[in-house]
Amino acid sequence: MKNAFTYKNLEDIAGDCKKRGLPIRFEKHLDILYEPVEVGGRKAGNRLAIHPMEGSDASADGKPGELTFRRWKRFGSGGAKIIWGEAAAVAPEGRSNPHQLMMRKENSAELAELVKQTRHAHREKFGIAADLLIGIQLTHAGRQCSEKPFIAFHSPVHDSFGVPGLKGKPIPADYPIASDDYLKSLEDAYLEAARVAKDAGFDFVDIKQCHSYLPNELLAARSRPGDYGGSLKNRRRFIFNVVRRIRETLGDEILVASRLNVYDGVPHKKDSKTGEGAPVAYEIPYVWGWGADQRNPQKEDLSEPKKLVEALSSLGVAMFSISVGSPYWSPHLVRPFNKPVTGEYLSPEHPLVGVYRHFRLTDEMQRAFPIVPMLGAGYSWLRQFLLNAAAANIAEGGVAIAGVGRTAFAYPDFAADGRERGTLNSRKVCLADSMCSNMLRAWTDAGEKVPAGCPVRDSKYKPFCKELK
Image 1 (spheres, rainbow, N blue to C red):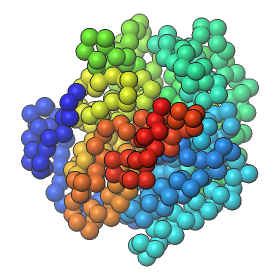
Image 2 (spheres, rainbow, N blue to C red; image 1 turned 60 degrees about the vertical axis):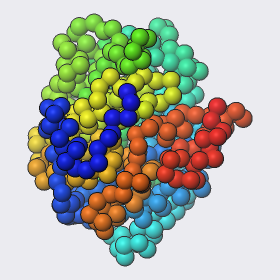
Image 3 (cartoon, rainbow, N blue to C red; image 1 turned 90 degrees about the vertical axis):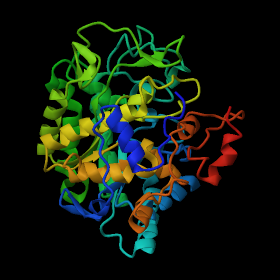
């Protein structure tokens, strides 16, 4: 798809939304974005957040590196009052790349320094940091682990995709699933990671359940035998145990949140004729996706995600970040884009359709649980108009907090600019060109991992583009 973003003003983009039958609304006045919001008894000073954005720049032992500190300090001075920190593995074998952060006791001092410097950058710019909430995302990459895949179940629609732990080859039919004993040991690892986060000064931990990583995959494990598969009660056992143990052990010393897929969708592959993404072949009933209608999995069925959120809220989960799809086989669902990652499919839909899907599903979840703050996604493609859409969604009760991911790489001070200028600078916004995603997956000719950032807007990352293999 050619660059679909040709809008010069709010009227242009609002008119195109109307023409396409997409009820995306835009509010000219942004004041509502800068009102405080309560999360689990704590106050965030505004309703803007930064989504987890990792840079593949930690040390080999999972400590934050120079570029990690630089990125987080830029986030800290950017003005968003919720920094939903990047994915950090709870176990060495659970890393998605060898330069991902790890939550372990040996890294405690460096993680505490990361929090300290982020808060200092915020306080230095805005005079106060008491209303800044900083979290960290606890993760296990599952079938996307860099050393070897850990799968919750076999799936004919997912096993055909290559995985990094098998050097890009698909999952063989005889590959073993992660055992119940291993999952039980991971519950211990999540608790220990949460304890490390608390000691480092984080305000909250996110138990990551999105984007096809292991806890997300377990939610769809209908075909899995044993304690963690089959019924919804079993499929939610892992997340229940993890949340319950963190809450019982650490109490209110640290909040628990979760970034949750409410719809996995159907994997897509490139159509050889059009180059666009097309759904892979699948059988009905479709039992391989969470939040998908089993009779028509290209439609959502949020009945189980709503049951999960209701139950997790009762256990003390204070906030949910709503997402959809997987960057590995349905990137147009996760992040509406103009240009795909190198070698991947063109978007099969106009990006505004994907933006509205995010808004619509988040709206449905927020209205189902009006007192539980939901954090919405899908904003970055809207460029300089993203805050206008966020203000409209919040004003209408469709979301409590609006977050950005790719935009934070390109434009970390978007929140401060929005407040000072009443609009965003079109020369600083994310272009949805997938450059940061290319970098996240890239290696140099020398076999070194390329750190991820925005080489278009941040000159620090331009030299790394020249080294891409």
